[in-house]
Image (cartoon, rainbow, N blue to C red; front, side):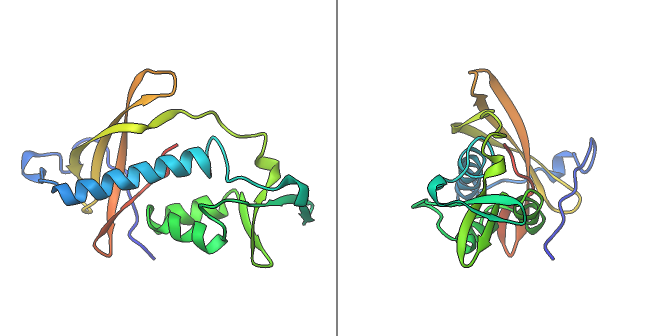
Amino acid sequence: GGKKCTACLNGCGNTEENKVYIGEGKMTVLRSLVSTNGFIADEIFGSAHLPVDMSKTITQDNLTFAPVVSDKISTYAELEALLNSVYTEDVVNTLLNETKKYVEIDGVLYFDVQYEQSETKKKYDWSDFEIEYDKTTEDGNQIFTISLKKTNGWKSKIEIETADIGGMPRLCGFYS
């Protein structure tokens, strides 16, 4: 079990002495995590999904699945590894198990085509963003503010939370 992420409302260790300096190395890692989250939000679990071959669909448990044909992610293990490199364990479990958009059948990665038409529109443009350290929560997680544009061009800010897992920051949420 990984470290749980808890949302902290006002005054959860918000004082000046809780301000910490985030080094350039960690900021580079965070930028990479946020970028990868954007890729996952736009191309895997959010506004689009991994490319599939609709001519090779199979039916199992009354659901129709199409095999994934992606040069970026071709196996369930690769998908799991990518998610584990970005998110805490509970987020990974939610992404993989709550919708079951992707499943492994006989060693092949499949996409559940019922989600084909239900895709949400892209909300954010993840190509250009700024990260600012906000605060550290009582349990040692860090909150950052991401400034970016929405796809409609409006400026927006979202708050992200990270937890250190084995010395590496991981996102405490899926930000789509």
